Length: 243
Ligand code: ADP
Image 1 (cartoon, rainbow, N blue to C red):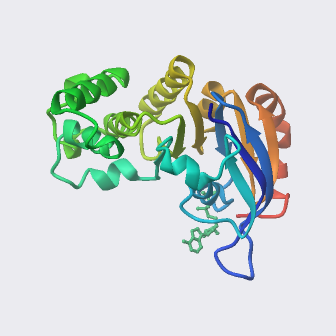
Image 2 (image 1 turned 135 degrees about the horizontal axis):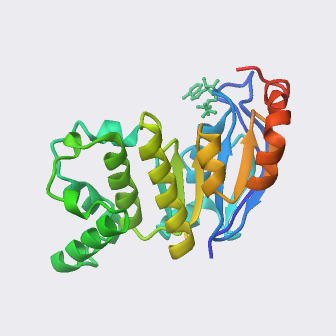
Image 3 (image 1 turned 30 degrees about the horizontal axis):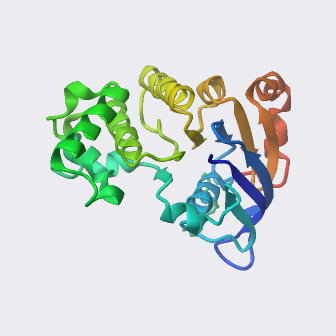
């Protein structure tokens, strides 16, 4: 059971300017939500708040009616930050080693054989089993991102938070990453909240859209968003922030 309820989230990096204002919406357990909006709209900031990395100035996030702290202690949240793959690629580690880092929360409870089994299984799930002995830095952007998803899954999360998982990845590889996330959502029932600039693919695989431009411009079904987006696009830019 992992639903996420945002109640009037407000946040500013300084006291004079709020980057998020009264954001409220509820993500049901097992839903796949994409957060879209212009650059500087506050999407990454909101994801960090849901991940419990920064605290809102006002409002609260409830995960299954509990605090984020309680959810984090249970190890049910996995957060994949922006440019994570590119940053990790600098390490001289193999794919297998990177995915095993995702087991950190289960350390002590697993035998080496058990850990290996999970790593193999996660790589298989993201279609990257043949890469396991390769150095992470040698892989393409799309392959690296698959490995990052496998690493996040290794901790057995119920809530997966991804910030621009396809930035810097070519169109075809991006589409395959979205497809993979859609499959993980439908087969494993993991709740996914993903920030994306790719409205076309994002709304194709995520059932719901949260459109953020410092305020919440839209929250609802992707289909409804797609059908209204072409005519409503200008509203993003005139709803308070022009970044
Ligand atoms: P988005 O993800 O929609 O592009 P962000 O959440 O990254 O937007 O940023 C929202 C606003 O907050 C931007 O104006 C950005 O410059 C500012 N901002 C982001 N991170 C910080 C930070 N660590 N310190 C100060 N301002 C920040």
